[in-house]
View 1: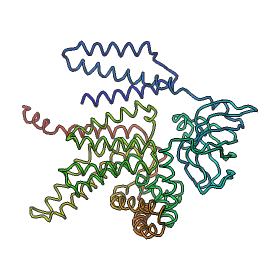
View 2: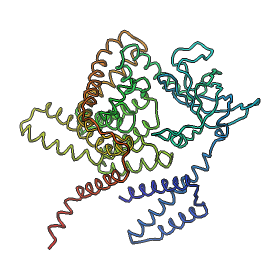
View 3: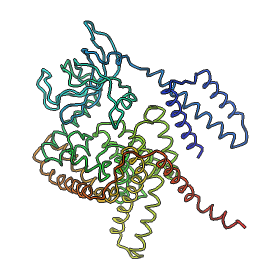
View 4: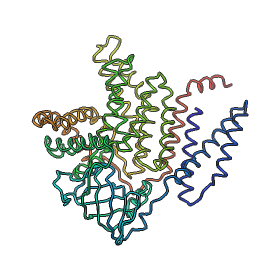
Length: 522
């Protein structure tokens, strides 16, 4: 419990530091560092009094979090690119992530090296977002998608300040990623390739080849769905299907983030337990391998990596026989992530990842216990073991789905102004084919690189699973009562929901002690 409290107040200190920094208020180091040192000395000298010790630990955590923000901001600083916003310039830099293909353009993240606003090149640093045409003239023969990770390119365009949209502050969103400038439809010239990390280059090349193989083996919209679920490439999904995913509350099925990877970890953990048995640690090795392979081919996005780390820590806690300490592991993991990247606190994906894991750790055991009780009542003492194992697998899957979905539902409503009334049944019916979709799509993508005819044969199995998934989405999104769309959702009721849920869980976790106290009461 002390570790959890320390992590909570450490995170609260970082959050407070972010608020202070964005308000141009700072606590100088000559105040925070001596205060932390004094608190540590006091903690060493204390020999008794748990409350005082706890208070000192909380003080260290809060002050340490605030100091971490100040050291992070001093180390990162701010680039000078935004001083050129509104000006036309030539720029050279390296594409530092996998290009994202959209309907009419390709989104490029570029680490700039130098800029020429007038007649001379000036050394610079910082990142910009560039939106070049989908089918550019690079001055070199290349296959689609033309741009590659680690290309050094020269662009000529007018740098612009990111806009503040009617329903989304894009400027603020990019600023938290240290991006202050964007450029639309520039002239692009390729200078050279091979300027990045060889491992990442291999991963991104594999993803591009798999994407091409899937496109060659499957028709639309199945091909787009397969790429979204397997590779995290959602740019080509038809708008009608995107709307259906939002209305039916099943967007998490294609979002490679916390909810998606968490559910995948739970499903393969249940599958491993069914296949290997819970008495062997191999049942935890299966989901661990699947999680990291999946994270790798999905592009190693920060949201996917965070979710994979959280899920891995949870699995390791179970393997070490400390599944009851999985909440400690989750809190420590989140605190470390926030320490390394403080601005992740503003990231919606991180928040949903954390809530999904929290739901699995805290809520799923209750659903699983209720399901086990129902299975025992229905099957009786003389149950056929294979059927019992299948029942346990389904029960575990449903419990994990319910835990992750219920924990994130209020937050999803708050962030996206929509409450889906059919999310649970739609997810429940769609979830069983998700592993099949991933496995068959992966086989199509990999085999299609070397043997396209074989991939097209396997593609029929992927097509069946993907078509089922799409039909489930279309059916539930077509219902007149499928979702409630709101202008906005106030933060107060959402916070109240989580506070009340926390109190209920505390009561449930201490119900035996509470019952004893009630019985002793006069």
